[in-house]
Length: 345
Image (cartoon, rainbow, N blue to C red):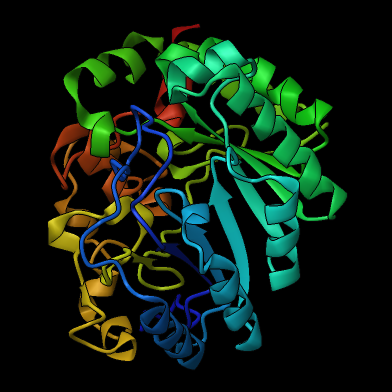
Protein backbone atom coordinates (compact mmCIF):
# COMPACT_ATOMS: atom_id res chain seq x y z
CA UNK A 1 0.00 0.00 0.00
CA UNK A 2 1.02 3.59 -0.51
CA UNK A 3 2.19 5.42 2.60
CA UNK A 4 -0.78 7.76 2.12
CA UNK A 5 -3.30 4.91 2.11
CA UNK A 6 -5.52 4.11 5.07
CA UNK A 7 -5.17 0.47 4.13
CA UNK A 8 -8.88 0.05 3.59
CA UNK A 9 -11.49 1.35 1.14
CA UNK A 10 -13.47 4.04 2.95
CA UNK A 11 -16.27 4.44 0.39
CA UNK A 12 -16.80 2.46 -2.77
CA UNK A 13 -19.14 2.78 -5.71
CA UNK A 14 -21.18 -0.24 -6.73
CA UNK A 15 -23.03 -0.10 -10.03
CA UNK A 16 -25.58 -2.68 -8.95
CA UNK A 17 -27.35 -2.69 -12.33
CA UNK A 18 -26.96 -1.11 -15.73
CA UNK A 19 -30.73 -1.04 -16.15
CA UNK A 20 -32.32 2.41 -16.05
CA UNK A 21 -35.78 3.91 -16.52
CA UNK A 22 -34.28 7.04 -18.11
CA UNK A 23 -31.88 7.54 -21.01
CA UNK A 24 -29.91 10.67 -20.12
CA UNK A 25 -27.84 11.88 -23.03
CA UNK A 26 -24.79 12.59 -20.90
CA UNK A 27 -24.89 9.31 -18.90
CA UNK A 28 -21.31 8.20 -18.22
CA UNK A 29 -22.33 4.52 -17.95
CA UNK A 30 -24.60 4.63 -21.02
CA UNK A 31 -27.20 2.94 -18.83
CA UNK A 32 -30.41 1.50 -20.22
CA UNK A 33 -30.83 -2.24 -20.55
CA UNK A 34 -29.84 -4.72 -17.89
CA UNK A 35 -26.30 -5.91 -18.61
CA UNK A 36 -25.74 -9.54 -19.52
CA UNK A 37 -24.41 -11.46 -16.53
CA UNK A 38 -25.29 -9.04 -13.74
CA UNK A 39 -24.53 -10.53 -10.34
CA UNK A 40 -27.29 -12.41 -8.54
CA UNK A 41 -28.46 -11.67 -5.01
CA UNK A 42 -26.43 -14.58 -3.68
CA UNK A 43 -23.30 -13.38 -5.48
CA UNK A 44 -23.83 -9.86 -4.13
CA UNK A 45 -24.10 -11.15 -0.58
CA UNK A 46 -20.81 -13.00 -1.04
CA UNK A 47 -19.22 -9.80 -2.33
CA UNK A 48 -20.50 -7.91 0.72
CA UNK A 49 -18.86 -10.55 2.93
CA UNK A 50 -15.59 -9.93 1.08
CA UNK A 51 -16.02 -6.16 1.42
CA UNK A 52 -16.44 -6.52 5.18
CA UNK A 53 -13.26 -8.60 5.32
CA UNK A 54 -11.14 -5.85 3.71
CA UNK A 55 -12.71 -3.05 5.77
CA UNK A 56 -15.14 -1.30 3.40
CA UNK A 57 -16.87 1.45 5.40
CA UNK A 58 -19.57 2.70 3.01
CA UNK A 59 -21.17 1.39 -0.19
CA UNK A 60 -22.50 3.96 -2.64
CA UNK A 61 -25.19 2.02 -4.54
CA UNK A 62 -25.55 3.35 -8.07
CA UNK A 63 -26.35 2.29 -11.62
CA UNK A 64 -28.14 2.57 -13.95
CA UNK A 65 -31.03 3.01 -11.57
CA UNK A 66 -30.45 0.96 -8.41
CA UNK A 67 -34.14 1.10 -7.46
CA UNK A 68 -34.77 -1.28 -10.38
CA UNK A 69 -33.07 -4.01 -8.32
CA UNK A 70 -35.83 -5.66 -6.29
CA UNK A 71 -33.23 -6.96 -3.86
CA UNK A 72 -31.68 -3.55 -3.11
CA UNK A 73 -33.18 -3.30 0.37
CA UNK A 74 -32.12 -6.86 1.15
CA UNK A 75 -28.54 -6.08 0.15
CA UNK A 76 -28.49 -2.81 2.12
CA UNK A 77 -29.78 -4.64 5.20
CA UNK A 78 -27.20 -7.39 4.76
CA UNK A 79 -24.43 -4.81 4.44
CA UNK A 80 -25.69 -3.14 7.63
CA UNK A 81 -25.37 -6.47 9.43
CA UNK A 82 -21.72 -6.43 8.38
CA UNK A 83 -21.33 -2.87 9.78
CA UNK A 84 -21.16 -1.33 6.29
CA UNK A 85 -23.11 1.88 5.74
CA UNK A 86 -25.04 2.61 2.54
CA UNK A 87 -25.95 5.57 0.36
CA UNK A 88 -28.15 5.33 -2.73
CA UNK A 89 -27.77 7.39 -5.90
CA UNK A 90 -31.04 7.56 -7.83
CA UNK A 91 -32.90 9.67 -10.37
CA UNK A 92 -35.76 9.44 -7.80
CA UNK A 93 -38.54 8.97 -10.37
CA UNK A 94 -39.35 5.63 -8.69
CA UNK A 95 -38.70 6.83 -5.15
CA UNK A 96 -42.20 7.09 -3.72
CA UNK A 97 -42.93 7.33 0.01
CA UNK A 98 -43.21 3.56 0.49
CA UNK A 99 -39.87 2.88 -1.21
CA UNK A 100 -38.20 5.66 0.78
CA UNK A 101 -39.45 4.05 3.99
CA UNK A 102 -38.23 0.60 2.93
CA UNK A 103 -34.78 1.97 2.16
CA UNK A 104 -34.65 3.72 5.51
CA UNK A 105 -35.80 0.64 7.40
CA UNK A 106 -33.15 -1.43 5.62
CA UNK A 107 -30.50 0.91 7.02
CA UNK A 108 -29.92 3.48 4.28
CA UNK A 109 -29.43 6.95 5.70
CA UNK A 110 -28.34 9.05 2.71
CA UNK A 111 -29.81 9.54 -0.75
CA UNK A 112 -28.14 11.33 -3.65
CA UNK A 113 -30.77 12.47 -6.15
CA UNK A 114 -29.70 13.18 -9.72
CA UNK A 115 -31.52 16.23 -11.06
CA UNK A 116 -30.23 18.47 -13.83
CA UNK A 117 -32.80 21.24 -14.05
CA UNK A 118 -34.50 23.74 -11.75
CA UNK A 119 -37.81 23.35 -13.63
CA UNK A 120 -39.58 20.47 -15.36
CA UNK A 121 -38.62 21.97 -18.74
CA UNK A 122 -34.92 22.25 -17.88
CA UNK A 123 -34.73 18.74 -16.46
CA UNK A 124 -36.61 17.33 -19.47
CA UNK A 125 -34.02 18.85 -21.80
CA UNK A 126 -31.24 17.09 -19.89
CA UNK A 127 -32.88 13.87 -18.71
CA UNK A 128 -36.03 13.42 -20.76
CA UNK A 129 -38.34 13.43 -17.73
CA UNK A 130 -42.00 14.43 -17.99
CA UNK A 131 -43.63 17.08 -15.83
CA UNK A 132 -45.19 14.32 -13.72
CA UNK A 133 -41.84 12.60 -13.24
CA UNK A 134 -40.23 15.89 -12.21
CA UNK A 135 -42.95 16.27 -9.60
CA UNK A 136 -42.11 12.80 -8.28
CA UNK A 137 -38.47 13.80 -7.94
CA UNK A 138 -39.36 16.84 -5.83
CA UNK A 139 -41.72 14.70 -3.76
CA UNK A 140 -38.93 12.15 -3.23
CA UNK A 141 -36.66 14.87 -1.84
CA UNK A 142 -39.35 15.73 0.69
CA UNK A 143 -40.11 12.11 1.60
CA UNK A 144 -36.43 11.52 2.40
CA UNK A 145 -36.21 14.73 4.41
CA UNK A 146 -39.25 13.64 6.45
CA UNK A 147 -37.36 10.45 7.34
CA UNK A 148 -34.30 12.49 8.38
CA UNK A 149 -32.24 10.90 5.65
CA UNK A 150 -29.33 12.97 4.39
CA UNK A 151 -30.34 14.37 0.99
CA UNK A 152 -27.80 15.41 -1.64
CA UNK A 153 -28.72 16.81 -5.04
CA UNK A 154 -26.35 15.92 -7.88
CA UNK A 155 -26.35 18.09 -11.01
CA UNK A 156 -24.23 17.47 -14.09
CA UNK A 157 -23.05 20.90 -15.18
CA UNK A 158 -22.26 21.60 -18.81
CA UNK A 159 -22.51 24.47 -21.25
CA UNK A 160 -26.18 23.82 -21.97
CA UNK A 161 -27.36 24.21 -18.38
CA UNK A 162 -24.70 26.50 -16.93
CA UNK A 163 -27.18 29.39 -16.93
CA UNK A 164 -29.52 27.27 -14.79
CA UNK A 165 -26.93 26.57 -12.10
CA UNK A 166 -27.85 29.55 -9.85
CA UNK A 167 -31.48 28.40 -9.95
CA UNK A 168 -30.34 24.93 -8.92
CA UNK A 169 -28.66 26.50 -5.91
CA UNK A 170 -31.92 28.23 -5.10
CA UNK A 171 -33.80 24.92 -5.45
CA UNK A 172 -31.39 23.23 -3.04
CA UNK A 173 -31.89 26.05 -0.54
CA UNK A 174 -35.66 26.02 -0.93
CA UNK A 175 -35.90 22.26 -0.34
CA UNK A 176 -33.40 22.51 2.55
CA UNK A 177 -31.24 19.66 1.30
CA UNK A 178 -27.98 18.85 3.02
CA UNK A 179 -25.74 19.40 -0.01
CA UNK A 180 -25.75 20.04 -3.73
CA UNK A 181 -23.02 18.45 -5.83
CA UNK A 182 -22.14 19.96 -9.18
CA UNK A 183 -20.59 17.26 -11.36
CA UNK A 184 -18.58 18.53 -14.31
CA UNK A 185 -19.62 17.12 -17.68
CA UNK A 186 -17.13 14.62 -19.07
CA UNK A 187 -17.35 13.06 -22.55
CA UNK A 188 -17.72 9.43 -21.50
CA UNK A 189 -20.47 6.87 -22.06
CA UNK A 190 -23.25 8.43 -24.12
CA UNK A 191 -21.69 11.78 -23.34
CA UNK A 192 -18.82 11.17 -25.77
CA UNK A 193 -21.07 11.51 -28.82
CA UNK A 194 -20.03 14.49 -30.93
CA UNK A 195 -23.43 16.17 -30.71
CA UNK A 196 -23.42 15.88 -26.90
CA UNK A 197 -19.90 17.31 -26.75
CA UNK A 198 -21.09 20.34 -28.71
CA UNK A 199 -24.00 20.87 -26.32
CA UNK A 200 -22.18 20.29 -23.04
CA UNK A 201 -18.50 21.00 -23.64
CA UNK A 202 -17.55 24.35 -22.10
CA UNK A 203 -15.21 25.49 -24.85
CA UNK A 204 -14.92 29.28 -24.70
CA UNK A 205 -17.40 29.50 -21.80
CA UNK A 206 -14.83 28.60 -19.14
CA UNK A 207 -14.82 32.19 -17.78
CA UNK A 208 -18.57 31.86 -17.15
CA UNK A 209 -17.96 28.56 -15.41
CA UNK A 210 -15.31 30.15 -13.21
CA UNK A 211 -17.67 33.02 -12.35
CA UNK A 212 -20.37 30.59 -11.24
CA UNK A 213 -17.96 28.45 -9.22
CA UNK A 214 -16.70 31.54 -7.41
CA UNK A 215 -20.28 32.61 -6.70
CA UNK A 216 -21.26 29.15 -5.46
CA UNK A 217 -18.32 29.01 -3.08
CA UNK A 218 -19.34 32.28 -1.44
CA UNK A 219 -22.93 31.45 -0.53
CA UNK A 220 -23.57 29.82 2.87
CA UNK A 221 -27.19 28.66 2.67
CA UNK A 222 -26.37 25.12 1.51
CA UNK A 223 -23.19 23.07 1.28
CA UNK A 224 -21.82 23.07 -2.26
CA UNK A 225 -19.54 20.32 -3.49
CA UNK A 226 -17.69 20.65 -6.79
CA UNK A 227 -16.42 17.35 -8.11
CA UNK A 228 -12.99 16.50 -9.47
CA UNK A 229 -13.99 17.40 -13.02
CA UNK A 230 -13.63 21.11 -12.23
CA UNK A 231 -10.02 20.73 -11.11
CA UNK A 232 -8.67 23.16 -8.49
CA UNK A 233 -11.48 25.49 -7.41
CA UNK A 234 -11.49 28.85 -5.61
CA UNK A 235 -10.76 30.15 -3.10
CA UNK A 236 -7.96 27.71 -2.20
CA UNK A 237 -7.36 26.10 -5.62
CA UNK A 238 -6.08 22.95 -3.98
CA UNK A 239 -6.77 19.83 -5.97
CA UNK A 240 -8.03 16.65 -4.34
CA UNK A 241 -5.57 13.96 -3.30
CA UNK A 242 -6.35 11.03 -5.57
CA UNK A 243 -7.62 8.06 -3.56
CA UNK A 244 -8.31 5.76 -6.52
CA UNK A 245 -7.41 2.24 -5.49
CA UNK A 246 -6.30 3.49 -2.06
CA UNK A 247 -9.51 4.42 -0.29
CA UNK A 248 -12.06 3.64 -3.00
CA UNK A 249 -12.87 1.40 -5.94
CA UNK A 250 -15.73 0.99 -8.41
CA UNK A 251 -17.55 -2.28 -8.98
CA UNK A 252 -19.61 -2.92 -12.11
CA UNK A 253 -22.78 -5.02 -12.06
CA UNK A 254 -20.99 -7.84 -13.86
CA UNK A 255 -18.15 -8.05 -11.33
CA UNK A 256 -15.54 -5.97 -13.16
CA UNK A 257 -13.47 -3.93 -10.73
CA UNK A 258 -11.86 -0.53 -11.36
CA UNK A 259 -9.89 1.83 -9.08
CA UNK A 260 -12.48 4.63 -9.31
CA UNK A 261 -15.68 5.83 -10.98
CA UNK A 262 -13.59 8.07 -13.26
CA UNK A 263 -11.35 5.23 -14.41
CA UNK A 264 -13.70 2.75 -16.09
CA UNK A 265 -11.44 2.34 -19.12
CA UNK A 266 -10.05 -1.02 -20.33
CA UNK A 267 -6.49 -0.09 -19.34
CA UNK A 268 -7.60 0.46 -15.73
CA UNK A 269 -9.57 -2.78 -15.33
CA UNK A 270 -8.12 -4.54 -12.29
CA UNK A 271 -10.01 -7.82 -12.70
CA UNK A 272 -13.32 -9.56 -12.19
CA UNK A 273 -14.68 -10.85 -8.88
CA UNK A 274 -15.88 -14.05 -10.53
CA UNK A 275 -12.27 -14.85 -11.41
CA UNK A 276 -10.29 -13.48 -8.44
CA UNK A 277 -11.07 -12.66 -4.85
CA UNK A 278 -11.70 -9.08 -3.77
CA UNK A 279 -8.81 -9.33 -1.31
CA UNK A 280 -6.42 -10.25 -4.15
CA UNK A 281 -7.69 -7.51 -6.43
CA UNK A 282 -7.55 -4.89 -3.67
CA UNK A 283 -3.86 -5.63 -3.17
CA UNK A 284 -3.08 -5.55 -6.90
CA UNK A 285 -0.64 -2.82 -8.03
CA UNK A 286 -3.11 -2.08 -10.85
CA UNK A 287 -5.41 -0.59 -8.21
CA UNK A 288 -2.99 2.29 -7.68
CA UNK A 289 -1.88 2.84 -11.27
CA UNK A 290 -3.68 6.20 -11.49
CA UNK A 291 -3.25 7.53 -7.94
CA UNK A 292 0.49 6.91 -8.17
CA UNK A 293 0.83 7.94 -11.80
CA UNK A 294 4.36 9.32 -12.32
CA UNK A 295 4.54 13.11 -12.52
CA UNK A 296 7.36 12.97 -15.03
CA UNK A 297 5.01 11.35 -17.55
CA UNK A 298 2.58 14.29 -17.62
CA UNK A 299 3.13 16.75 -20.44
CA UNK A 300 1.94 20.26 -21.21
CA UNK A 301 1.09 23.38 -19.20
CA UNK A 302 0.62 21.54 -15.89
CA UNK A 303 4.37 21.00 -15.59
CA UNK A 304 5.09 24.72 -15.24
CA UNK A 305 2.37 25.31 -12.62
CA UNK A 306 3.33 26.06 -9.03
CA UNK A 307 0.61 23.64 -7.86
CA UNK A 308 1.80 20.75 -10.01
CA UNK A 309 3.16 18.64 -7.17
CA UNK A 310 0.09 19.38 -5.09
CA UNK A 311 -2.62 18.54 -7.64
CA UNK A 312 -0.48 16.09 -9.69
CA UNK A 313 -1.99 17.32 -12.94
CA UNK A 314 -5.57 16.60 -11.92
CA UNK A 315 -7.67 13.48 -12.29
CA UNK A 316 -6.16 11.20 -14.93
CA UNK A 317 -9.58 9.75 -15.74
CA UNK A 318 -11.07 13.18 -16.47
CA UNK A 319 -8.02 14.16 -18.51
CA UNK A 320 -8.31 10.98 -20.55
CA UNK A 321 -12.02 11.60 -21.16
CA UNK A 322 -11.47 15.12 -22.46
CA UNK A 323 -8.20 14.71 -24.36
CA UNK A 324 -7.87 11.02 -25.19
CA UNK A 325 -4.34 11.15 -23.75
CA UNK A 326 -3.44 9.84 -20.30
CA UNK A 327 -0.29 12.02 -20.24
CA UNK A 328 -2.01 15.30 -21.13
CA UNK A 329 -2.40 18.36 -18.91
CA UNK A 330 -5.69 19.22 -17.28
CA UNK A 331 -7.94 20.86 -19.91
CA UNK A 332 -10.46 22.65 -17.64
CA UNK A 333 -8.13 24.08 -15.00
CA UNK A 334 -9.92 26.96 -13.24
CA UNK A 335 -6.75 27.87 -11.35
CA UNK A 336 -4.92 28.50 -14.62
CA UNK A 337 -7.85 30.52 -15.93
CA UNK A 338 -7.97 32.66 -12.78
CA UNK A 339 -4.21 33.23 -12.93
CA UNK A 340 -4.45 34.36 -16.56
CA UNK A 341 -7.30 36.71 -15.61
CA UNK A 342 -5.23 38.25 -12.82
CA UNK A 343 -2.17 38.63 -15.06
CA UNK A 344 -4.19 40.47 -17.70
CA UNK A 345 -5.40 43.15 -15.28
